[in-house]
Amino acid sequence: MVEVSAGRLDRRLALKVQTLCPFSALNTVWRNLDVGHKTLDLEITNLNIGGELMIEYELNKLTNGLSTISVIICTLNEAENLPHVLPKIPNWVGEVILVDGHSTDNTVEVALKLRSDIKVLYQPGKGKGDALKCGIENATGDIIVTLDADGATPPEEMSKFIEPLLNGYDFTKGSRFAVGLPQGKPWYRILGNWIITLTFNLLFFRRYTDLCSGYNAFWRKRLKDINLWSSDGFENEPLINVRAAKARLKVTEVGYGERVRIGGEVKERSWRQGLKAIKTILRERFFPA
Image (cartoon, rainbow, N blue to C red; front, side):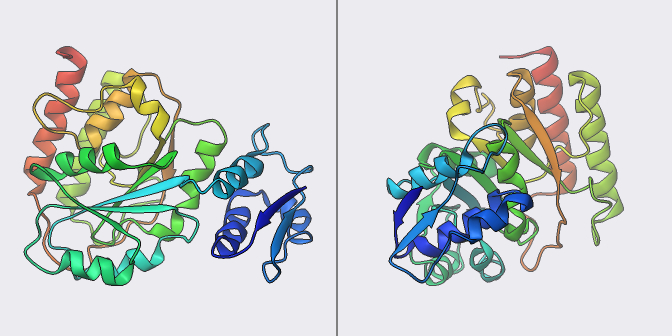
């Protein structure tokens, strides 16, 4: 029996149990869960996820006051979109980091209004790769989740990315195509992603359906096993996936329902993104640093 002090953790614990337990174990948990009292008692002796008592692990982390999950969102003039993203981040996320590329609108002000506990950082350089690096290096959670600021990556589907990590995987990569073709995506972007993914699969012997999704989750402790940053400054999703494959991390692909950009402009032209992705894959395969 694990006893946990009540307070602001009550809702987080309830949601974490609901998210991480298999359905067969939910009845056992809810019989022993009373959010309205001063303590939360969880009977965990019958809960076994992936051969380990992961609920006990999560509870221990929370009761020690640690942040188990960090969410990183990179922004550049995304004030219009943040109200559709930040409020939907699950309550069991312990840390939300916004890395801003020196927006000229009120992106930061909107973020602080929506979440007073958000950690705002200003990236030292330019580009999404630089912003991702800044966010990852400053994250404190055991698990890091990356989201797009434009509303395309639904935060409410985050539990699908966390569960494989708690069951032994090192990296959960998102796929916009594993559940069908995304609605509203131009044909040339779909074709470009297919070419990029096919190139990667042929050269690295994988069977992925998407290589450029901004929705990913991974254990922070595994970053030491790979060199995540490239010499040419391009550290977007293709490089992360390539380096994870080269380091032989245990990776699984999770499909999600991508949404169309809510507002604002795409920050980089699709053909330029595609050329950078192909360049990264070829360099990493034939001319590794």
